[in-house]
Image 1 (spheres, rainbow, N blue to C red):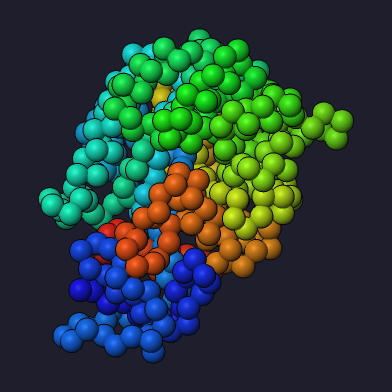
Image 2 (cartoon, rainbow, N blue to C red):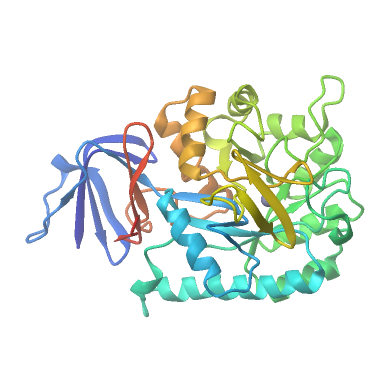
Length: 395
Ligand SMILES: [Zn+2]
């Protein structure tokens, strides 16, 4: 049994003062006020002093980091990405594909499924492997494209985009052995509705994005089973006061959660605030859309099969924004500043809310039975220490 104490600890019910966190076998045994529970005999607590302890962040949209793309076949790619994510407070994530030739996508899905399944095995009760801890865990795959709009493709290459077809999805699904847990799709495309319903029936979180849909097409997709939106405002028909479009559906429909890239570059700070007001404390989700360039100096990097240039925090391909170099710790601080939210509210948009989006009850909260993934923050939201399943990640 491990014990940790801190001035403050964030639970789903709010902030606990002078808190005690008990961990055993990689899971939370209890998260309580220190006065409410005696330490088990012989257990010496590790004291985090004046810090705020919160559940680790879950990033639903990661293309890469530390010089590597999640679609790279190099064996060192995912470990390098996962160590960098952990340094910024991310304890679990969804490796995210970009539109690519179909065989490239199939091979990437097989490799990513291997990583997701290996992580599940290593973390399961019977054969715990401590080598697996110390870095962020891949929980499932986010398929971003190829079922997206030519008009709103961003930097996804036209020649790799496909119309939504059940047979094509089925090939992806088989290659991923069911590890696709999230899919971004443009709902206005022919046959999108059938695919949305079929994917949702398999438990995939269907997310609207890279879309030129009007308001009613977006609403029909939500009725068909879509329940999230991808990087709201980016690669999306803009919100017009006489052309409400998909953005208005995403902002106003309480059946959908939505994510946003809060780097101050992809979306202006005042629009991040508008978004936070519209979606509220429980449906606002932060993502990074991080690329291989994240955590690296300015230069040229890969995004899937494309090349992107990074200069002064902007990641572009042929002049278009191409993913980001944002890290989740910065996104949380930005949301707090832009939306004038307190730190715990901004933190929830990076842990509790995304975990709810993908219906993972073991992540995103510090409560008895949950995975002991937690981070230690200073009062400004800087990440001091990161623990995955009770084991500290090196910095
Ligand atoms: Zn992306």
